[in-house]
Figure 1 (cartoon, helix red, strand yellow):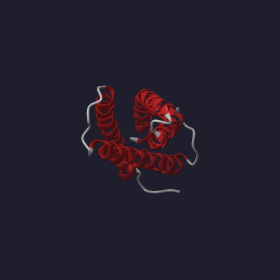
Figure 2 (cartoon, rainbow, N blue to C red; figure 1 turned 135 degrees about the vertical axis):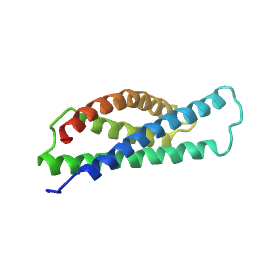
Figure 3 (spheres, rainbow, N blue to C red; figure 1 turned 30 degrees about the vertical axis):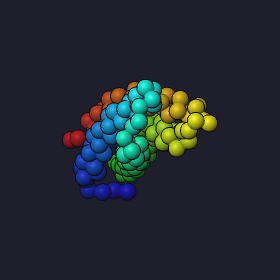
Figure 4 (cartoon, helix red, strand yellow; figure 1 turned 90 degrees about the vertical axis):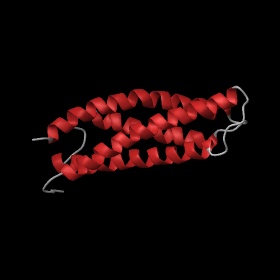
Amino acid sequence: MHLPSFLWLWRIAAWSMGLSLLAYLLLAITGIWIFRTRRIQQERPSWLLSLHYLIGSCIVSLVLLLLLIGIIGTLGHFGSLGHSPHLIAGLTAVVLVLLSAGSALLINARRPWARRIHIGANIALFFDFIWVSLTGWIVVQKYLP
């Protein structure tokens, strides 16, 4: 695939990554809020869990969009994948986000392990987002003239 310029693609990727980080922050805030109300046995607002799920579905969509952009952009520019550690960092982010979302859907009183997986995946995702951001910056430098 040879397109005249991938600048439009990188703009979408930059916005998607920024929104993913914002969604992650909002998920952390609402997740801690949910945890806190559960821990002190306080009634949580009825909309809180729905908001957490909505933001979670947004981050899943954004990360999958980033995966698609990365594949299209790299194949279009280089003709193959695997030119940097950014591929592994990005694929790890996709797996962690999907693991987090999948385990979130399983959380209930009979499956306490699902909550541990959900929280563990999100902690790992924090460090992976740092890795993705650093390797992504290096990749961006390759594309800019």
